[in-house]
Length: 246
Image (cartoon, rainbow, N blue to C red):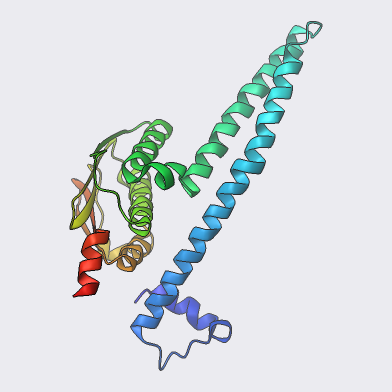
């Protein structure tokens, strides 16, 4: 049971009709799953707003600044300031574009998980100046939408943790699947940590819940001064169907 969700449910018992004495572990797990689904829908909404509204307005503003900076009668100092502002605006537009795709990856939706993983690894490596080595077979079998989204979010969270906390300049990402199971491994070579002591702070509980929702598991191995390896495993659609049929 996740303490943070349990305490939140207790504080809001009037609005979600929680009865602590009768509440089962399954009900609490179901609540956390619904919260994750609501958060995903909000991510999709924000991504659309950023792309369709904010992104388009920034592009129009950049176009106007570009036209203005090319006016022939501008003073050199004014032109220089306009060009500086235009460069900053283009950088901001790129950041908004990247944020939109982190919130909701169109590559994940249309091209599949390997392509989406390549994009997020490329963006994070460039933004944080680290080496991310991705091994993912582009010809891997297609996954169910919920499994793809689950592993994409787990990869995002694990990479963020490696970048923020491990102090490692190198991260290895390995993705593989077959007709039975899909495996995602993310390994850094940093300071390591105690997984049992930092479940909430590093988003591990959320990763565990995401994987539980698709019948998956999460394992973490960490050694002080050596690094951390995260292993996420889930069943493929065919494997899950066979399990339910049995």
